Image (tube, rainbow, N blue to C red; front, side, top):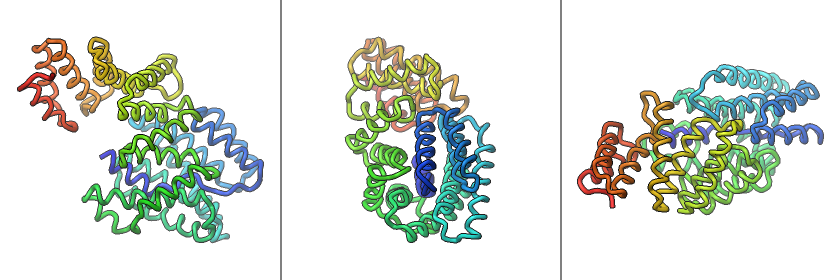
Length: 379
């Protein structure tokens, strides 16, 4: 389901591509974008209020105010209290852009801000599993980016939107058969072309460098399983935005995939420290993930007694956060605890944990592994 969400997100996303009116405008927007990625929401709000004040006829300031809301939503997708305000703000941008396009049909700035607003509205729809709404927003947004590309094919930020579409429209239907009927309303993609366009935006984009790096990091991690390439972009994002938990978590996850457990432990320990200090965005869900991967790291270093506490803390926090929908963190923590108890010669405790795993939904290989370890203890 998460991969389907990512597909729909990426096929409709046109992001924050537009052309500044003058140097001051560009500098203000660049400052505001960095503030958003650094989760400095109050500062970003002041910056884009200044943009709106200085350039009242440009919808960009209002668009980026919506992006502040988007990042606040991203920090905890289970919290829906900002949804209506976010959609209201995007709808206002769309209306403003329509007024501009009625007078100036070839206004590229208005095209992209409208397309970006439709795209982000669609992104939220995928998170809330409103698939039809997401698809229609994508269908309305995509022609805007194609037209803008025709008007200015050399603009690197334009290529960012096309790169996202080209990559995911090519990859997802091949991986998920049930998506193919939905793709009938969209043009076909081109994976290699999409990668080239995204890399160009990550290197040369004016306003899309960070977002392009983010997408390259996630696609190399989740789809290509090329962890070296994913790490390249994770390091860049982490260095540029050191207190953004989204980037910091990916950095740690990639280290786990690379079996660099000591480095991963250092990374997740740093995340845990920020959680304890109350850094913006470092909430209970981030803390739970840090507990889990600290447990994984210690487990693979054969530090079973220490690993046990990480999984116990993850399990406790998962029970608080999950409600009736048991998460993979809870299921995998139980499985790991069973494996640890087997390693420590505590067979009865291990059996109890494996049986608990089987009470819940099958997550990945959780049932087959638990059944296997019930028959023959984990070695």
